[in-house]
Length: 306
Ligand code: PSU
Ligand code: MN
Figure 1 (tube, protein in one colour):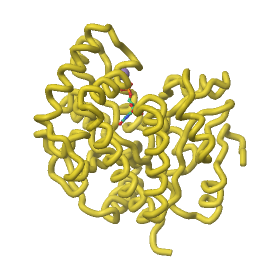
Figure 2: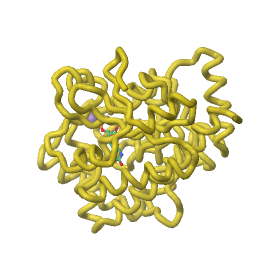
Figure 3: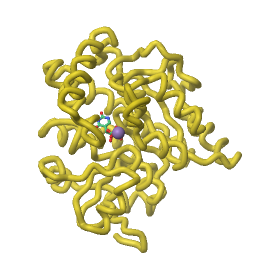
């Protein structure tokens, strides 16, 4: 199905739109740049299954053949997971991939834009991009933060990756007017770890409360998204203390190799995966699934009783 926008809906998503069923957007950079094959494709499928089990329809988003695809079939997802030379798309280059026909995966920022265009209000990911350590000299601040400040999508993430400067990330989110909600926790989670030592600015404990909060923001005309910070399940967490030395080593190696711009986040994730002997990947998979479940519950709550 196509309309005036360069959006192509997968079958399942088109049917959900027609019948007003809840939909959860999912990103694809985690598939192309966040995890190795085949764990990337297996995880994407498992995450879609979690969304379905929780009563919503998954819409994995990517740019292929000059269109923003909303909902990918199994073969397309597999193709994306094995392709090389896929652009990692954010606000700056989403339209470039559409108009040149280059394949591209969507980051949190680009997925939010696509979800808003498609009328999808909830999105699950692993962790958002944020303010990198040393940003005071590199100016490396993820476009995800800017997007959260302007695009009306609820993003469910396990906080932000501990490779970032988390206090600065929270400061920027506050400046941009983004509500950051600890989901069932007072603590801002640090992706692989449940604790960061930082307080979550707000706290809510149920999907219904989050849906109500989103509706109130809309009533008040408050533009922009919100971040639901959902801690990794206890049994899958790697403590902040255990992660710290791997993170420090990965950051040092990135600096030595002169890794910059878009390559920074994928490099650090890959390097940490090697250093933890794959343990960080298992944690990553567990937290994305957990976020997909919460996002689906919020999407169901937003649709309301039927
Ligand atoms: N979380 C993960 N794996 C990832 C990412 C997040 O577990 O690959 C991706 C997301 O797509 C996020 C992006 O939007 O990293 C941030 O990249 P940057 O720091 O370059 O903005
Ligand atoms: Mn960056």
